[in-house]
Length: 60
Image 1 (spheres, rainbow, N blue to C red):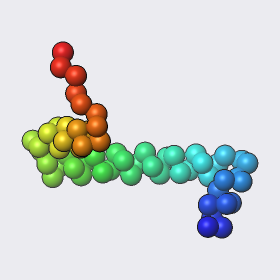
Image 2 (image 1 turned 135 degrees about the vertical axis):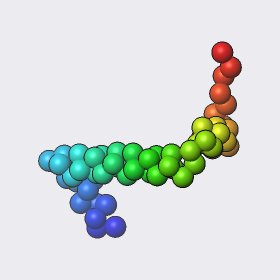
Image 3 (image 1 turned 120 degrees about the horizontal axis):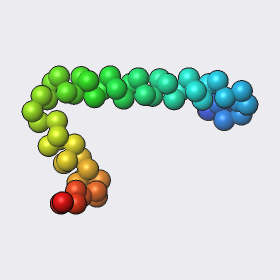
Image 4 (image 1 turned 180 degrees about the horizontal axis):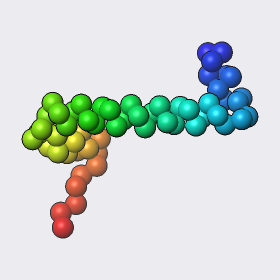
């Protein structure tokens, strides 16, 4: 809890930038690994996830 408080009170912004960069790297790595594991099923997987979240693809 103390770490969250320090993060929220950090005024330099460096820690926020660091977390943003780490988040982007983790997301890109995750997508890369998923694309290797699920070569042909990845688009269908994301369609199912988005549908379960309530976002439906609009035709057209």
